[in-house]
Image (cartoon, rainbow, N blue to C red; front, top):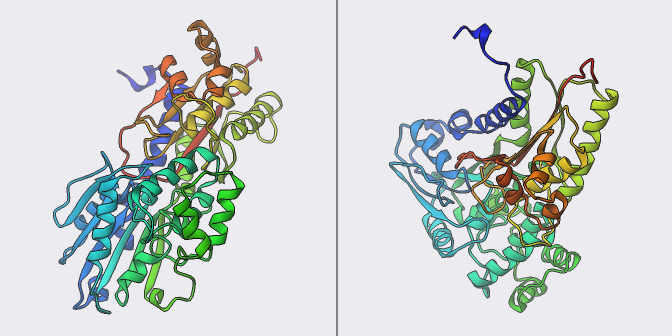
Length: 435
């Protein structure tokens, strides 16, 4: 077929290409090599590779493919996210609620870094999801306690920073404790960020960085959201036994942290795709937070202003944003924060004929299902009503996945082997003479 005879690209296809570009920009094979230490830095010492997160297995493989010397190690990733490695052991565990294999793996990680010396280098590969994949309870707590707290936090509406504050103070490995265990070895941590603001202590709850927050801060989060936690958890926090490693601790003197992939980088990659297609991209922010349905309404309002008045920017354009919204679960539907955002935004768009949208989690999992997100079209409301669906009822029931699956508009990627948080794109077509 002559390229000139090909049909124009659809809005849905363009949005999906932007999403795919965002994911591709954060692939470990691309991000890891520039940050690997050189052989002189290792000297006569050993290189031990450890890590946790949804991208950690792919990060480990990238290390092996770009490192010629000896190494050994262990990383923990989510079920279904393992990739083959020759020298670094890959263990799979549960996310977002931790399980026993994750606890066993966390114990093994701590054991692996015992007895090192100052000539050794620990390369720590950390990405989003590590909080649940390294569930080593603080003394006096059990895995069941950690699971109960995780479930309660996920339903509470707390921000990721608030949730990780609580997790750090109930852990024997997070909040800088893993780096402290490596002392006196040097520690280089490579981070793929999945949190608003890219704060290292919030990525996998900061196992290799100092934590300035306290047990009192964790208690404040629990009280703020009325979270019901076991009595043993309250005892650990109220007694101060859960205090983490603080800034200035001498055991962290030999540590270095590098951010190798971030939500902003992913949005910029998507913007390149949009520009190449003749659509002007506008990045609204890489760290938008708030209740998903509220953020959806606000961004829909901005999109309607663009479409109707050409303000604050003219169409055709795409409004890009990242970050991590929250969902206060009140229904019993199947959903995640991205489809919650998309459904709320779509309802607020009132079927506008020139506005399309896509939202997805860059790790390929929105909520607890193997569905990344969804796609919204101008006729989504009409198609839903024709199927007997009531969009507002679906939103009230937190049933975003059920809604978009019924329309055939779920976005499914499979395991992406990376994680740079949420991706949201609202595409506004240029007005026509009929408009």
